[in-house]
Image 1 (tube, rainbow, N blue to C red):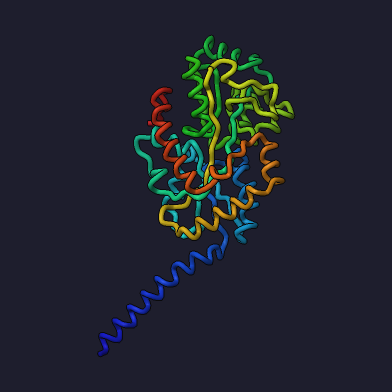
Image 2 (tube, rainbow, N blue to C red):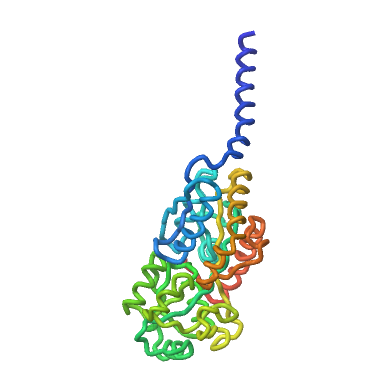
Length: 328
Protein backbone atom coordinates (compact mmCIF):
# COMPACT_ATOMS: atom_id res chain seq x y z
CA UNK A 1 0.00 0.00 0.00
CA UNK A 2 2.94 2.33 0.71
CA UNK A 3 4.05 2.58 -2.93
CA UNK A 4 0.46 3.20 -3.98
CA UNK A 5 0.09 6.01 -1.41
CA UNK A 6 3.33 7.62 -2.60
CA UNK A 7 2.16 7.36 -6.20
CA UNK A 8 -1.18 8.89 -5.26
CA UNK A 9 0.50 11.78 -3.48
CA UNK A 10 2.73 12.39 -6.49
CA UNK A 11 -0.22 12.36 -8.86
CA UNK A 12 -2.12 14.80 -6.68
CA UNK A 13 0.90 17.11 -6.55
CA UNK A 14 1.23 17.11 -10.34
CA UNK A 15 -2.49 17.77 -10.72
CA UNK A 16 -2.21 20.67 -8.30
CA UNK A 17 0.64 22.17 -10.31
CA UNK A 18 -1.31 21.82 -13.54
CA UNK A 19 -4.34 23.46 -11.98
CA UNK A 20 -2.22 26.24 -10.52
CA UNK A 21 -0.56 27.15 -13.85
CA UNK A 22 -3.62 28.78 -15.44
CA UNK A 23 -4.43 30.53 -12.19
CA UNK A 24 -0.88 31.93 -12.07
CA UNK A 25 -1.22 33.23 -15.63
CA UNK A 26 -4.60 34.74 -14.80
CA UNK A 27 -3.02 36.65 -11.90
CA UNK A 28 -0.26 38.04 -14.13
CA UNK A 29 1.50 40.38 -13.53
CA UNK A 30 2.65 40.17 -9.93
CA UNK A 31 5.99 41.93 -10.46
CA UNK A 32 7.62 44.42 -12.88
CA UNK A 33 7.82 43.55 -16.58
CA UNK A 34 10.88 44.13 -18.78
CA UNK A 35 10.68 45.37 -22.35
CA UNK A 36 13.92 44.83 -24.26
CA UNK A 37 14.74 47.72 -26.62
CA UNK A 38 17.59 46.59 -28.91
CA UNK A 39 18.99 50.11 -29.37
CA UNK A 40 20.74 52.70 -27.24
CA UNK A 41 18.73 55.02 -25.01
CA UNK A 42 17.66 58.32 -26.55
CA UNK A 43 16.76 57.06 -30.02
CA UNK A 44 13.27 56.92 -31.59
CA UNK A 45 12.63 53.27 -30.70
CA UNK A 46 13.58 53.93 -27.09
CA UNK A 47 11.53 57.15 -26.92
CA UNK A 48 8.35 55.62 -28.35
CA UNK A 49 8.70 52.48 -26.22
CA UNK A 50 9.03 54.53 -23.03
CA UNK A 51 6.01 56.68 -23.90
CA UNK A 52 3.78 53.66 -24.50
CA UNK A 53 5.23 51.64 -21.61
CA UNK A 54 4.40 54.43 -19.17
CA UNK A 55 0.73 54.33 -20.08
CA UNK A 56 0.41 50.55 -20.41
CA UNK A 57 2.08 50.01 -17.02
CA UNK A 58 -0.71 51.99 -15.34
CA UNK A 59 -3.29 49.68 -16.88
CA UNK A 60 -1.57 46.39 -15.97
CA UNK A 61 -0.71 47.63 -12.48
CA UNK A 62 3.03 46.94 -12.64
CA UNK A 63 6.08 48.92 -13.75
CA UNK A 64 7.47 48.27 -17.21
CA UNK A 65 11.25 48.51 -17.20
CA UNK A 66 13.03 49.42 -20.45
CA UNK A 67 16.23 47.42 -20.91
CA UNK A 68 18.45 48.80 -23.68
CA UNK A 69 20.43 46.04 -25.40
CA UNK A 70 22.03 47.62 -28.49
CA UNK A 71 24.10 46.05 -31.24
CA UNK A 72 23.95 44.42 -34.69
CA UNK A 73 20.95 46.43 -35.86
CA UNK A 74 18.75 45.14 -33.04
CA UNK A 75 19.40 41.43 -33.58
CA UNK A 76 21.36 41.04 -30.32
CA UNK A 77 18.44 42.29 -28.24
CA UNK A 78 15.95 40.25 -30.26
CA UNK A 79 17.98 37.07 -29.74
CA UNK A 80 18.15 37.78 -26.01
CA UNK A 81 14.37 38.18 -25.86
CA UNK A 82 13.83 34.95 -27.81
CA UNK A 83 15.89 33.06 -25.18
CA UNK A 84 14.12 34.67 -22.20
CA UNK A 85 11.81 32.72 -19.93
CA UNK A 86 8.31 32.48 -21.40
CA UNK A 87 6.68 33.74 -18.21
CA UNK A 88 5.32 37.05 -19.49
CA UNK A 89 7.89 39.14 -17.63
CA UNK A 90 10.27 39.71 -20.55
CA UNK A 91 9.04 41.07 -23.88
CA UNK A 92 10.64 42.57 -26.97
CA UNK A 93 10.02 45.93 -28.58
CA UNK A 94 10.35 44.71 -32.16
CA UNK A 95 10.40 46.66 -35.40
CA UNK A 96 10.79 46.46 -39.15
CA UNK A 97 14.55 45.91 -39.18
CA UNK A 98 15.19 42.95 -36.91
CA UNK A 99 11.66 41.49 -37.00
CA UNK A 100 10.93 41.97 -40.70
CA UNK A 101 14.08 42.42 -42.77
CA UNK A 102 16.67 40.48 -40.74
CA UNK A 103 15.91 37.00 -42.15
CA UNK A 104 16.65 38.38 -45.62
CA UNK A 105 19.86 40.11 -44.51
CA UNK A 106 21.59 37.45 -42.41
CA UNK A 107 22.41 33.93 -43.60
CA UNK A 108 22.53 32.85 -39.96
CA UNK A 109 20.16 34.49 -37.48
CA UNK A 110 19.98 33.45 -33.83
CA UNK A 111 16.18 33.64 -33.80
CA UNK A 112 13.18 33.40 -36.11
CA UNK A 113 10.83 36.42 -35.91
CA UNK A 114 7.80 34.22 -36.59
CA UNK A 115 8.61 30.88 -34.96
CA UNK A 116 10.35 32.10 -31.79
CA UNK A 117 7.91 34.80 -30.70
CA UNK A 118 4.25 35.31 -29.86
CA UNK A 119 2.87 38.68 -31.05
CA UNK A 120 1.27 40.85 -28.36
CA UNK A 121 0.28 44.15 -30.00
CA UNK A 122 1.39 46.62 -32.67
CA UNK A 123 2.36 50.26 -32.19
CA UNK A 124 1.30 53.05 -34.59
CA UNK A 125 3.69 53.52 -37.54
CA UNK A 126 6.36 56.21 -37.77
CA UNK A 127 7.47 57.84 -41.05
CA UNK A 128 11.14 58.59 -41.61
CA UNK A 129 12.65 61.93 -42.58
CA UNK A 130 15.89 62.46 -44.49
CA UNK A 131 17.96 65.14 -42.78
CA UNK A 132 21.37 66.68 -43.42
CA UNK A 133 23.67 68.75 -41.27
CA UNK A 134 22.56 72.38 -41.25
CA UNK A 135 25.54 73.63 -43.32
CA UNK A 136 25.32 70.95 -46.01
CA UNK A 137 25.35 72.38 -49.56
CA UNK A 138 22.37 70.26 -50.69
CA UNK A 139 19.14 72.18 -50.21
CA UNK A 140 16.82 69.39 -51.38
CA UNK A 141 16.91 65.64 -51.88
CA UNK A 142 17.59 65.95 -55.63
CA UNK A 143 20.67 68.04 -54.90
CA UNK A 144 21.79 65.50 -52.32
CA UNK A 145 21.49 62.68 -54.83
CA UNK A 146 23.38 64.76 -57.41
CA UNK A 147 26.08 65.30 -54.80
CA UNK A 148 26.27 61.55 -54.20
CA UNK A 149 26.47 60.90 -57.93
CA UNK A 150 29.29 63.44 -58.35
CA UNK A 151 31.17 62.21 -55.27
CA UNK A 152 30.81 58.38 -55.20
CA UNK A 153 31.26 56.98 -51.71
CA UNK A 154 31.84 60.43 -50.21
CA UNK A 155 28.26 60.97 -49.11
CA UNK A 156 28.35 59.78 -45.49
CA UNK A 157 24.94 58.79 -44.12
CA UNK A 158 24.73 57.57 -40.51
CA UNK A 159 22.27 55.00 -39.22
CA UNK A 160 21.17 53.23 -36.05
CA UNK A 161 23.09 50.07 -36.94
CA UNK A 162 23.41 47.65 -39.83
CA UNK A 163 19.98 46.21 -40.49
CA UNK A 164 18.17 49.06 -38.73
CA UNK A 165 15.36 50.94 -40.45
CA UNK A 166 17.59 53.97 -41.01
CA UNK A 167 20.19 51.74 -42.69
CA UNK A 168 17.68 49.86 -44.83
CA UNK A 169 15.90 52.95 -46.12
CA UNK A 170 19.20 54.66 -46.96
CA UNK A 171 20.28 51.55 -48.87
CA UNK A 172 16.93 51.50 -50.69
CA UNK A 173 17.33 55.15 -51.72
CA UNK A 174 20.92 54.60 -52.89
CA UNK A 175 19.83 51.61 -54.97
CA UNK A 176 16.76 53.38 -56.40
CA UNK A 177 18.71 56.54 -57.25
CA UNK A 178 21.74 54.67 -58.58
CA UNK A 179 24.31 56.32 -56.31
CA UNK A 180 26.94 55.07 -53.90
CA UNK A 181 26.64 56.22 -50.28
CA UNK A 182 28.92 55.35 -47.39
CA UNK A 183 26.54 54.07 -44.70
CA UNK A 184 27.97 54.61 -41.21
CA UNK A 185 26.52 52.35 -38.49
CA UNK A 186 26.08 53.36 -34.84
CA UNK A 187 24.60 51.59 -31.82
CA UNK A 188 21.34 53.47 -32.07
CA UNK A 189 19.74 56.45 -33.78
CA UNK A 190 20.57 58.77 -30.87
CA UNK A 191 24.37 58.60 -31.36
CA UNK A 192 23.91 58.67 -35.16
CA UNK A 193 21.87 61.89 -34.93
CA UNK A 194 24.39 63.52 -32.61
CA UNK A 195 27.05 63.19 -35.32
CA UNK A 196 24.74 64.70 -37.94
CA UNK A 197 24.16 67.68 -35.66
CA UNK A 198 27.90 67.87 -34.95
CA UNK A 199 28.78 67.75 -38.65
CA UNK A 200 30.78 64.51 -38.51
CA UNK A 201 28.53 62.96 -41.19
CA UNK A 202 26.40 64.41 -43.98
CA UNK A 203 22.99 63.20 -42.87
CA UNK A 204 20.69 60.35 -41.90
CA UNK A 205 17.16 59.01 -42.01
CA UNK A 206 15.46 59.33 -38.63
CA UNK A 207 11.96 58.84 -37.32
CA UNK A 208 9.73 61.85 -37.00
CA UNK A 209 9.14 61.49 -33.26
CA UNK A 210 12.79 62.24 -32.47
CA UNK A 211 13.69 64.27 -35.56
CA UNK A 212 11.02 66.97 -35.23
CA UNK A 213 12.60 68.84 -32.29
CA UNK A 214 15.99 68.91 -34.04
CA UNK A 215 14.40 70.19 -37.26
CA UNK A 216 12.30 72.80 -35.43
CA UNK A 217 15.38 74.09 -33.60
CA UNK A 218 17.30 74.24 -36.93
CA UNK A 219 19.99 71.86 -35.68
CA UNK A 220 19.52 69.87 -38.89
CA UNK A 221 17.74 70.47 -42.19
CA UNK A 222 14.94 68.22 -43.44
CA UNK A 223 15.02 67.34 -47.14
CA UNK A 224 12.26 64.75 -47.61
CA UNK A 225 9.94 62.33 -45.83
CA UNK A 226 9.51 58.66 -46.69
CA UNK A 227 5.72 58.45 -46.33
CA UNK A 228 3.39 58.33 -49.33
CA UNK A 229 2.02 61.77 -48.48
CA UNK A 230 3.49 64.78 -46.73
CA UNK A 231 3.55 64.95 -42.95
CA UNK A 232 1.36 67.67 -41.43
CA UNK A 233 4.08 68.77 -38.99
CA UNK A 234 6.53 69.10 -41.92
CA UNK A 235 4.14 70.37 -44.55
CA UNK A 236 6.86 72.17 -46.51
CA UNK A 237 9.03 69.06 -46.73
CA UNK A 238 8.26 66.99 -49.86
CA UNK A 239 8.10 63.22 -50.07
CA UNK A 240 10.85 61.24 -51.79
CA UNK A 241 8.18 59.85 -54.11
CA UNK A 242 7.16 63.27 -55.40
CA UNK A 243 10.73 64.46 -55.93
CA UNK A 244 13.18 61.79 -57.10
CA UNK A 245 11.85 58.22 -56.81
CA UNK A 246 8.19 57.74 -57.77
CA UNK A 247 6.49 55.10 -55.63
CA UNK A 248 9.10 55.27 -52.86
CA UNK A 249 7.39 54.68 -49.51
CA UNK A 250 8.58 53.39 -46.15
CA UNK A 251 7.60 53.76 -42.51
CA UNK A 252 8.89 52.14 -39.37
CA UNK A 253 6.47 49.68 -37.78
CA UNK A 254 6.76 48.37 -34.23
CA UNK A 255 5.24 45.66 -32.11
CA UNK A 256 5.55 44.01 -28.72
CA UNK A 257 6.50 40.33 -28.82
CA UNK A 258 6.77 37.70 -26.08
CA UNK A 259 8.93 34.57 -26.19
CA UNK A 260 7.08 31.67 -27.80
CA UNK A 261 5.23 29.65 -25.17
CA UNK A 262 4.19 32.64 -23.06
CA UNK A 263 0.77 32.02 -21.49
CA UNK A 264 -2.08 33.34 -23.68
CA UNK A 265 -3.67 34.89 -20.57
CA UNK A 266 -0.60 37.09 -20.00
CA UNK A 267 -0.47 38.11 -23.66
CA UNK A 268 -4.18 38.94 -23.67
CA UNK A 269 -3.89 40.96 -20.45
CA UNK A 270 -1.09 43.07 -21.97
CA UNK A 271 -2.94 43.44 -25.25
CA UNK A 272 -6.17 44.56 -23.58
CA UNK A 273 -4.29 47.12 -21.47
CA UNK A 274 -2.72 48.57 -24.62
CA UNK A 275 -5.98 48.64 -26.59
CA UNK A 276 -7.56 50.58 -23.75
CA UNK A 277 -4.71 53.09 -23.83
CA UNK A 278 -5.12 53.55 -27.59
CA UNK A 279 -8.75 54.59 -27.05
CA UNK A 280 -7.53 57.60 -25.05
CA UNK A 281 -7.78 60.47 -27.56
CA UNK A 282 -5.57 62.78 -25.53
CA UNK A 283 -2.81 60.17 -25.67
CA UNK A 284 -3.18 59.38 -29.38
CA UNK A 285 -3.32 63.11 -30.19
CA UNK A 286 0.01 63.49 -28.38
CA UNK A 287 1.50 60.75 -30.53
CA UNK A 288 0.01 62.23 -33.71
CA UNK A 289 1.60 65.58 -32.86
CA UNK A 290 4.96 63.84 -33.31
CA UNK A 291 3.90 62.81 -36.85
CA UNK A 292 3.31 59.23 -35.68
CA UNK A 293 0.67 57.60 -37.88
CA UNK A 294 -2.36 56.13 -36.11
CA UNK A 295 -3.72 52.85 -37.48
CA UNK A 296 -7.24 51.40 -37.60
CA UNK A 297 -8.03 49.79 -34.23
CA UNK A 298 -8.03 46.25 -35.64
CA UNK A 299 -4.41 46.66 -36.79
CA UNK A 300 -3.14 46.97 -33.20
CA UNK A 301 -4.06 43.44 -32.11
CA UNK A 302 -1.82 40.41 -31.57
CA UNK A 303 -3.44 38.62 -34.50
CA UNK A 304 -2.86 41.56 -36.83
CA UNK A 305 0.77 41.89 -35.71
CA UNK A 306 1.39 38.20 -36.34
CA UNK A 307 0.05 38.43 -39.90
CA UNK A 308 1.96 41.66 -40.51
CA UNK A 309 5.23 40.13 -39.32
CA UNK A 310 4.87 37.16 -41.65
CA UNK A 311 4.06 39.47 -44.56
CA UNK A 312 7.02 41.74 -43.82
CA UNK A 313 9.48 38.83 -43.63
CA UNK A 314 8.30 37.76 -47.09
CA UNK A 315 8.32 41.32 -48.46
CA UNK A 316 11.86 42.06 -47.33
CA UNK A 317 13.23 38.96 -49.00
CA UNK A 318 12.16 40.57 -52.28
CA UNK A 319 13.26 44.11 -51.37
CA UNK A 320 16.68 43.08 -50.04
CA UNK A 321 17.41 41.09 -53.18
CA UNK A 322 16.31 44.00 -55.39
CA UNK A 323 18.43 46.53 -53.49
CA UNK A 324 21.32 44.05 -53.14
CA UNK A 325 21.38 44.46 -49.35
CA UNK A 326 23.18 41.74 -47.40
CA UNK A 327 24.97 41.83 -44.05
CA UNK A 328 26.96 38.61 -44.42
